Length: 125
Image (cartoon, rainbow, N blue to C red; front, side, top):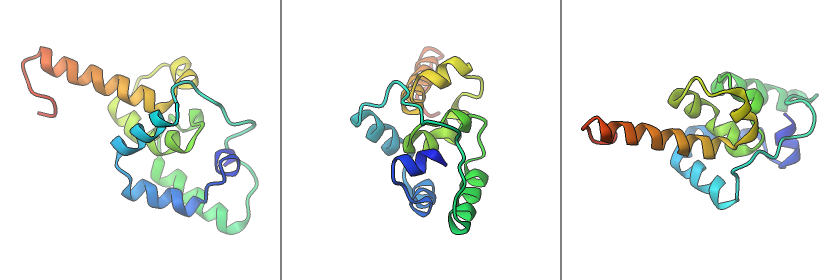
């Protein structure tokens, strides 16, 4: 995956982050790094990799399993692909290609909380 190469990420570390890093932490970290607009990876999402990395990449794809993955452009986008899709499954492709997934996650989570408050419930109920 080009993102892994560009950002010098090890697939094993990304798999560990998928298991252990809370979504809110990923979103906050992306915002601290200034991720709002996309900084698209050059070229295709996939690249030729050595056999060990290939197995890790295939495991990442299996575990992320999100239709938003083709628009991922950073580590945070990779980690947030699945939670973002679970939160809002109908995001227009123009938004997916323009904004970071951290920004979109915070935006749609805020809309959900606002709707819950208007409907008389408490957030998360």
